[in-house]
Length: 105
Image (spheres, rainbow, N blue to C red):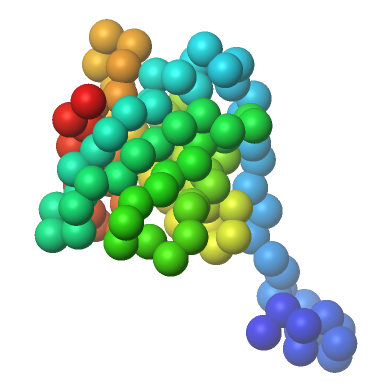
């Protein structure tokens, strides 16, 4: 759709832009851990570069997410939001596309 709008100069059709909020490796470490994702299994979040990487046996490939706010991240490829619940400076879980994952480790 964006390519067609660009080719024909259609107004009002522009890509969504996201802003990355820089977080230190220490700040990102609050989110690292193992999470239980209902009806899917367990996933592991690790700190990678300036964001987080989610890996799980049920995923074809790892998902790299970047921080947009203190507790909201987004998938760099498709913009999907990941919203973390943080208590006492440690993530307890996250929500993505209506699914709530719980930190287990």
